[in-house]
Image 1 (spheres, one colour):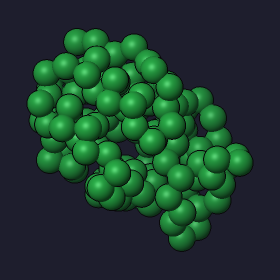
Image 2 (cartoon, helix red, strand yellow; image 1 turned 30 degrees about the vertical axis):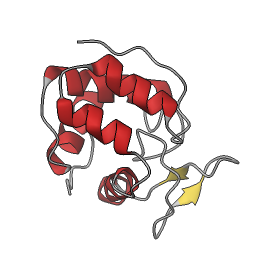
Image 3 (cartoon, one colour; image 1 turned 45 degrees about the vertical axis):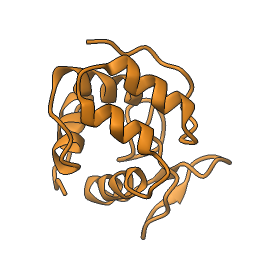
Image 4 (tube, rainbow, N blue to C red; image 1 turned 135 degrees about the vertical axis):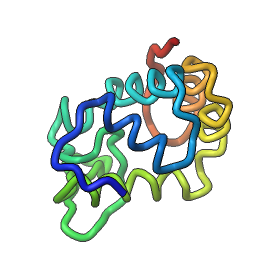
Length: 125
């Protein structure tokens, strides 16, 4: 789990793909950064260290809205929560599209069709 004190949307996407052993392709980076933009976490709202607005509570985190989106006390805590959420068994379509690594639009469609809660968003490569 990365211990960096700060990320950009691009470096966080690269770190997420690397940590989850998903292909580090231009399409996957575009998909994850598009997803980050759609969610607005960390850089666009008060969900600190939570670019994808996960709702998994962790020690030291707190909800920022009625949906339960969490603000985390550090990047490593937020990163671990995102990895745990993606790995909890509820998102096989998202993971399959990311494993393919060649279609950001397919990843976006799987995110939109999932229970994650993100609406449709543009993503292309």
